[in-house]
Image (cartoon, rainbow over all chains, first blue to last red; front, side):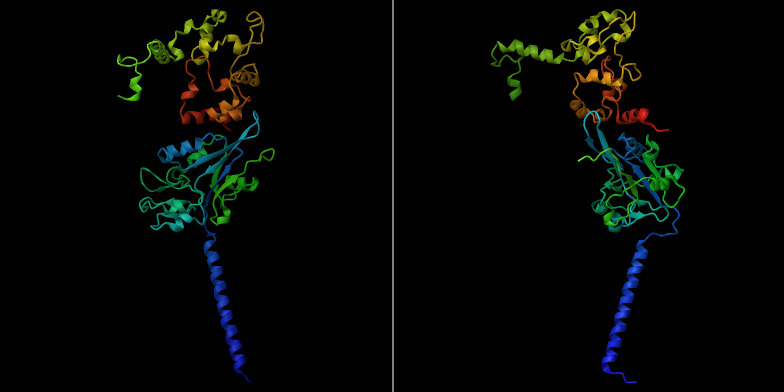
Length: 231
Length: 166
């Protein structure tokens, strides 16, 4: 068989191209698999805030303050109020919960130079190791939801941890969930199909904030459904 | 000497026109004794009402609404007595469980109180509007409406009192 120089070079070129495409494709697939969630994880906590049921009483914020010893002037959870909408005497307000979203791809964890910000592999909760935190505030700058703050007492970064160190340890629901009089907050394991959380997520339309950033937040909101469109 | 002390009426060195001095002193004294509570409540015009013959305990008016300058009478809010007490009447009663509808109760208050001003004081006025009676949260007859001094925690508990889902 006669192998010309041209055939040899074409063959080599094809081979090199094939190998490089294969390795790039493999790397892409690998990085996607790495970013995707560990499917063996049995507990992954999430929360739903039903904006239709919320009445803006702020009981959640006060309960959180008491249970987690949050000093005055800062807060782990804030209920933002907008309105009034409509004409007197039929006016309404809209409420939106602002607290840690416990992102699966948390920017605060990525930027933390000391490893103080971390995602708990057992629960999916984004936590802060106060002993490691140096208070550089990178995480505060990185968080797209602006829920982090420097605790004036400990001088370290602080935020909602789903009451992991307080309520969850005692087998209770987070303080805000327990305090809510209208049951607007539902907390639970997103991996458990029998949990109230999953049932709520399946029965109500929900949205998550800034999903386009790829942070994959785990705080779900049930949007306010008004009778008519209000401009 | 500061600018303020130039006008201080006690110092004899001040060159205030003497004709202004008594009125100035009067204004200071009147200003100091402004709170309504300083007046003895029995002497207030509203507490001279004939209603007080029977309603000694629950009728006496203290606080801001008793101010003589406002000239509020019992009838201003509660309506005309009609055949009361011998027969039934349309007297308005201000409680959360009153026979007077909440709309009418709130309407009475809104004759003087502007809903926009109320909204500025607290956003919850807007949502409750005329759906519940003002008396569900407020008290008028007492010297100071207790709701004005509640803490944020007590406030949340107050919401819980009605909104609690069992």
